[in-house]
Image (cartoon, rainbow, N blue to C red; front, side, top):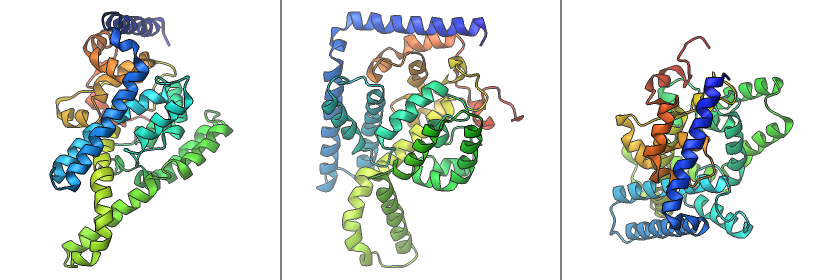
Length: 344
């Protein structure tokens, strides 16, 4: 990494930290970080339960229920991300793990957060490298195709379809010494347990739900499946479909705002971009504006998501003035390579 790049990284870190410190000094409420995080969790849970109840009694239409839950759970994802970085109740393990469970049960088809915690820290250490397991898991580095779009929201389907290729890649990286024996054991654990206890059974029920409706569409009477639908449909409307929408948005934005495969090790300038093209606006809402703020997090990791949102304009200016790209949509056509070349 050359001296210019190192200076750009230092400048971004110092100036973004200065923005946070300035905001905190003017807003003393930010000192109550644990209580704010807990309050966000309880508020989101209350909203989700309220929306679910409104749907169950017929007050809230299905489409509005799904959209509302997808939006609210996008906030819970950001809260989980903060928890993975130990930003709430670090010294009170019971409350910490209670919050981890609280953000998980309303997003039950996502990766188990206790397992994800390791891979997310690994991602920060090796972002953009071929062995960045977290980003490869959500299709970063794959060619843009209908298949990639199909598997984006569904971690189970993505794993089943892509596991032969990913297995070869992982073995290559292990033989190079980029993955340890401990990493390999955790990869196996992730594959076997990462979507348990909720993700696998709920995803299977989702496909059963789809098949039942397909049968009805070709002439089979839906009444034959009434008993099944009475308990499957609420799970789909309140848990699965909103989170499929949310995960599609999050995984699309994340996998395309992170670069992959030709990044210089440790070069944060090459790891991320600010990704907010106009056509991504609906996706940004369903991932709580991840494309606008996550690049900031790669430089200063120990600030909560709401503070990143409140100061994002000032922080973005610092990033863009110091080498971070804005809306590099060309990278989508080149498997998220930083250097945009077919020679890989």
